[in-house]
Image (cartoon, rainbow, N blue to C red; front, top):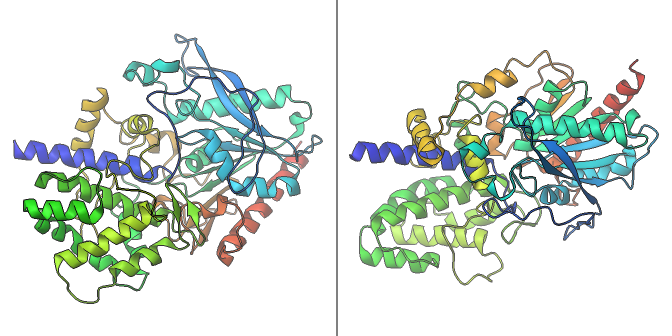
Length: 499
């Protein structure tokens, strides 16, 4: 019985790890009770950068690859054509992620920054089953039968059909070369869009896109090694003390008084009552350190709440113990670090370990995707990383998926359908990765050919290059954006010269 419980926990932990870490911090979606297609022709505005766009809907097929299901749904997409030159200006097409497309539209500043120079139309296409693009309305998440059409292949087909619709119905768009862009899972989709539909998009920018984070392609522990390296770079002995903290939590949580102390020290909304509940505290902290690595930006940025510039350096000041300290002293520092991430402004009265910077994502949708074709092995060993040892157990992972959805994952399908590491025959794709971003471990970080180009940003966290220009940007990201723009212009010229 103990072995069964342990195995199940490993499966659930691995699944949560995949779901949590791929998601972008701060994205807001409503997966369980989504709002149906009520806003038409609306404009959206970013808090820091005013952007104006038109919200449109396209009647999209539910199933592009079969003929029995002939239904359609309202596919949401956002259009900004203020800078567009209808006489051959390009279309920059954002391949939507696992969330509400309005968030990505407002935060993908690179597209807005270069639109005028390129004379480009901006299109942000929502991913099916997220935001408002729900194939079966309120029933879309009701069971696995309705979730059956939530795949990357179907989403790419949505994008292809939508682009063809735009080019055939918008006056002047017939001559517009289309470039796909995306970050994280959206970056994976932009790369795959160019691979699968090269006649529709002339090139792609795949930012922080872990297209190789699949079985047999990269070691399962590399992701958490990068997180650990980020904390080690702080110079405050930070990674060593995070590694020590797990046993300290075990020791302190062994008594009722210790549980009470932990609850008060972390300011938990729901106090810990049992020793087993300390596991949730550990999981919450592990996700916190991962999220900090993903959003270690060189300027203040807002997610749950505002974060300081270079937040890992700030957090690690609380963990700069050069020698062994008591469990209580160490966990006091850990609690202060966590509070900086979740309560930087000091406005929260307590911290909820069931809520994190990614807890409002479309968890159920991405759980399903992780349990079908997005199988991304994760593991830790506690030696080369600062986390507790946790093996990758595919069977436990599969069992957890079966208990949730009644389905089993296809571990090797992504490699089969998208080529794995055998992609040299493709062209015109930029793979950009940040040296601080854990997802670079599964990304393309070296040139494969003259037109399959890797751009590394040593001081970059998760797709920093897709964010707005900022006065505090490091030179490496400025250089990356300039290179990306240069390639865009090259692809546009090539498309215009093509017969």
